[in-house]
Image (cartoon, rainbow, N blue to C red; front, side):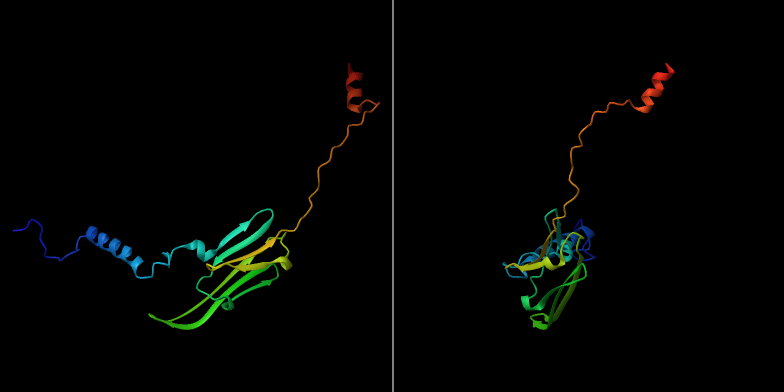
Length: 162
């Protein structure tokens, strides 16, 4: 005689299903070769890209590791940078796949559109950058205090009332 009935089958308890789901999630790491790292589908940082906007330069880094260099295109339209990637339908072990993306970034006003350059790293990170224009702001100056031999009109009025 058993203290636990098995009438509902194995993994009928929600806690047991949670453990099974966690174990299956861990096993998915072994479905791909070891040299391909874990890719979280909810990793929004790669979906949006990393933007660097400091006083010297503006740069955008996007993970385009699924694309070949000839499948990528970077253009400027007005004060906007457009990054496009597209590869035609390919067949792999799971079926057929076609990928396409378009990312648009507005350049800051102090970035020269003509100075925009792009670099693709060996690990598939595309960086589009441009130096910021050296805009000289108003510089501070010391204003000397000039001695005056006349009294302030308000000061004269106060002395007359005394």
